[in-house]
Image (cartoon, rainbow, N blue to C red):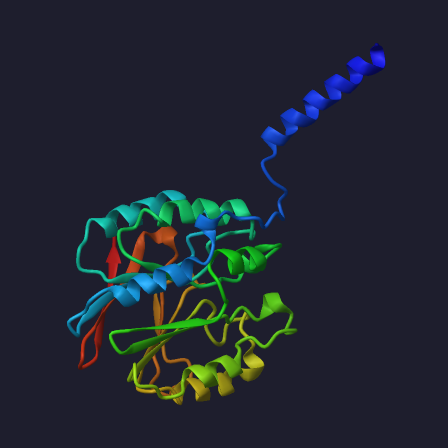
Length: 266
């Protein structure tokens, strides 16, 4: 009788523990609504109509700044002139599934499409697997209104240089001329020169970017600070955005003749 009672108590404890601990820290199982988000959102971007001039917002490093992210989403939803959003990476702090879900549950309130890059914090722990399931490939591209956005994984340090980061084969393929675009924008999380970047190949990286078709500019997050740099003194400008904690984002207006930008506070 005592043994049976102890067994029942143990079962109750285990059952209760399952409710308290929702998942293992390195759990990577996700529901369908949290899978292949970038592919879904890129299709929405492609289906949008544009008359030649378009606007997009660039932001990043939302990490634990959830209240500021909520305010950002409310601000964006209150506007009607932005075509889509690019998140420059660092969705999470520790690469935990719960962090990815927290952010996605907020971002899906947006009334316009958005794509998300992988940041260096997003590949910690099981983060790389979670990112790949939730958003898709770490390197990807899309074309909107004849402008090609090439989005790169530049988080070399977290890969221990065991994987080519940046992936030059991917870049070579993406910069090939094609009928659907005639200008290019590169997007990344870690900028060249940063300790997280593979600076052994930064000059090759700079050269390859310059081979792209009518390069407009490059974008990066990671530094948590708005900045404009010509890292290689070759005329290529790199625009870095603030972290979401600073309650700002970059707004780019791309016209047939060129582009303009604005640092927007909300």
